[in-house]
Image (cartoon, rainbow, N blue to C red; front, side):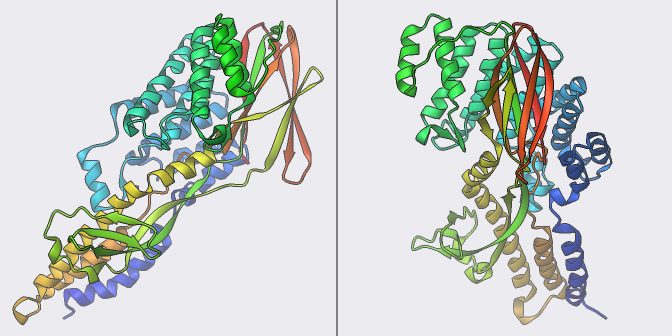
Length: 474
């Protein structure tokens, strides 16, 4: 009769093969048909793929589903339904996605099985698309509400990190957008405050660069321009000196202005990498995890008897960790032509840089949680094995259970490779003066083969500030 230990060892090869074939697939791998259709501009087909995908339909992925549904509806020009999905996503975030049960899932299984809570920059991007949707629906009042919600999101971020330096605790682009929204509602006082707040984020950063984005000249001019419109001449003079520019006020265009957002490329995707750690003990008996190169040293806050922890059991602890992979954009540059004038784009948001840097910022904290989870499983495994061999006898049931815990630990370890993948890699913008009446706006894109592609849109100059966004998600 095969004992439990032998049975588990025999079964492990079969289960391991199943794990390699399905368990190692990343989130991107499992939604690839949807993602490919979005990249190809087949938005209707993409929506069909999204609705039939079993992974994103799971309750733990509801926030991701709502963000993707809102995005694809926006791309389809269905702004009403787009905001329905984004509002539902907003509501989920407001109610909170953390619970004791969900935390236990993260400890006992892996973070991929927890509810997706959204990256911090993804939460700001919800406000960006909601505000544009409201603008396109001519719902200025709700667009302004969304502008105010950007401030609340920024405050929440600041509280989360206690305003620590070198952490993503605000979003300069969102504050720029907030200023534009206020300006579109002729609220130049709040517009100035928003532009100033955005500028101060850049000024506090090295070389006036914030997460891969240098302070746009357009933002500098907006700060000074709105300061002068408010009669804040002293502030305007001070910002001229701070920015090192000489600003000459321009006569407002009769047809108003168009702010053109170019959303280029695809956000990075997450994959899984394996890292290996050992457990060490210092002279005080404290326990620390360290990687092979010794570059990471992470405390292990163990509540049990530290002296009884067998360090040999932790000589090669495998950690499944997420890693971003950047997607090379098909288009390298673009320029706007309007009324014979060429207007360059300025980068306003670098989502690629945000993704890589914010993951790096939280590595030590989250790595500590992962290692502690694995260590607890390992301690449980060896405790059961030790109990199986008491009094010189071997308890096959307990020994088999120990190997079962080992196998479960191996197969359940998985990195969280989820993210909002239809976001662009970066967003650039141009402010375009309009003539009264019909305006022909031409966008010229340079593709990876060095050839130019053009798109022309017609904008009716109304004397007001208008918005337009265009996505090239290849």
